[in-house]
Length: 75
Image 1 (cartoon, rainbow, N blue to C red):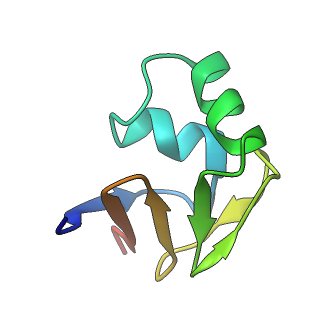
Image 2 (cartoon, rainbow, N blue to C red):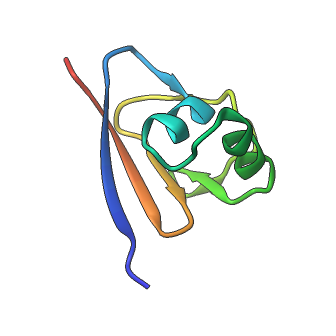
């Protein structure tokens, strides 16, 4: 199955992983974002990440299921 690519532009130096999942529209609530991260189904730059507060910076790639989220900066 092909990955669906999303690009999310942030206006701050970084965004926390759980907030990014909500901001990108992949989760309806912070609680669901937390569950996804804790279940080990979220990868950051190709490595599974179980820290929901991990700082995500422009240039990072976050993968959840069939979605790939590329983070960019507004500056």
